[in-house]
Image (cartoon, rainbow, N blue to C red; front, side):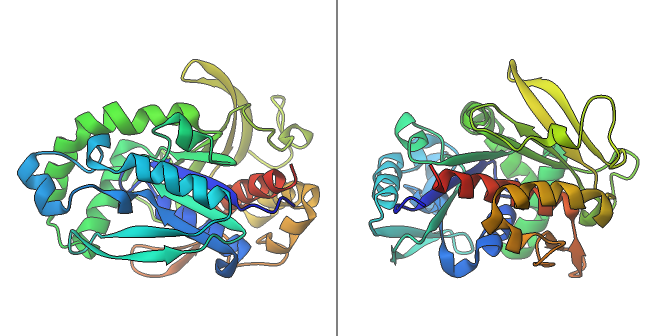
Length: 311
């Protein structure tokens, strides 16, 4: 293993699921081994100032991108930083926090791939791209329950931010090694989080696991709930792994074993072998749900982080 921290980037629009995936990855490695950095803490203006200026938090000019670059450089060298803290509840800034990098560092936020200097700091880059209708639902639920907004205010904020989302957030997709899209099945779009499918776009920028051993275009013995195919994303050829929310433990077992056998250290975290907590999510009424699409996503990202550590 390299002596420096392994750095994972997770970028996506507001309420795209970044924090959920980040917490899941930290759970895989053990929270004591992971440092989490949110680039949204580097806002230049608080909520009141942004409203007065008519600028959104998604705009690069509203963020200290140069300080993010500096801090990523320091973290990659294993050095500590004094990180700002933006309080999403109050819309103001709290006192900064002294951060020491652990073995694994996860950097999540809106603008983490905004410059070439930032891109050079990551070992693995993930972009979250749920359907806009689902992201809207997630944002309404989060901002009304946790941040004191009304549904009308959230929808108006989304409308005002759309230009910046299109101009500054979505283009960052092109830099990702993997693009993660959770989406509801067409037949049951209103069902619980438990039934969300996942579409994993795997770019050839890093070597992905060879799923063709058990999945191929002629069909597979795992059932139709797990599919591997070829496609194009932003004009470039990619592999696509899809896992349906109704996939069973038996159907995903071979996928997990393929990942965990290739990287032995990962084996202790496989949800079907040693850690049944992987892939757990909190449902809309507070119940704990098991999502195998989420479990495989967490393990795939962890797989790449471990592989990066061996380079």
